[in-house]
Image (cartoon, rainbow, N blue to C red; front, side):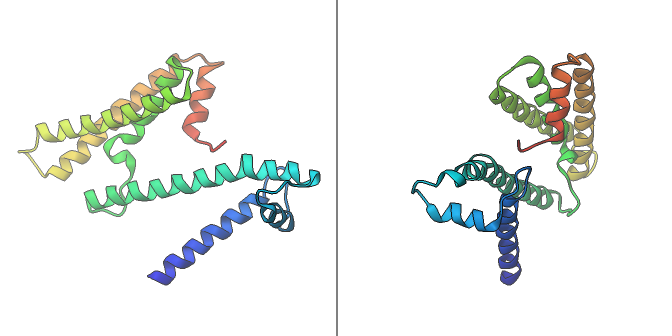
Length: 188
């Protein structure tokens, strides 16, 4: 087990290092090593552009991807433990649809990215709350886990429908492309 974790960690580091060299402006490993060997010293002018690309563009995206992947792993493990099922997904409680609806609503009504994130988080929590309320109101009829799953399906369907309405009513030239792009996801 420890050897597997060590191997996966090494694979993550190697993948991150390779990702630093790939892109529209390829950078060789030798140049990458030269840039990191300078440290805080002043870089020569021929390495300055490449250092800016690595430090200002690629490295933040790679670190964000690693953090996002780690948070997905933690949330996935908690969902799997809660439902005792290794095939569970965030859509099972309607979180996915609720968050997507909240983000689309935030894009339509707010221009600031923080408000979009807050709206997405709020409606994701609201979707889970609706699923919990549905399962709690019928708990004497069946298994609590089954009712929670059914409540999540109902909540997901509700917020998926609301997302479709927001996309239909959004401005097709400015807001709708932003909603679609946000829902597809990007680290840019």
